[in-house]
Image (cartoon, rainbow, N blue to C red; front, top):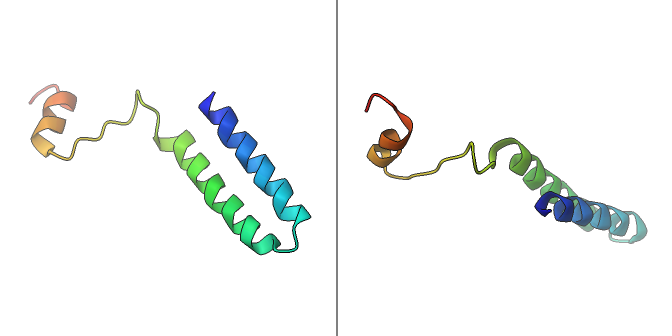
Length: 66
C-alpha cells in the first residue's frame, strides 16, 4: 500500500512537471522522490534493516557468537 502511494506521487509530479512552465522545479522534485523510492525499495525493508546506534546492543541482537 505504501509503495502504491509513492508510485502515485511520482507519476502525479511527473505529469505536473511536463504540464508546467516551471518544469525544472517539478523535475527536480521528481528526481528526489524517485531516489527516495529507490532507497526505500533497496534498503528499508523492516525485516532486513536493523538500526541500533549502540554497537553492543546491535551486536547482541545480530551476532550469534556474542
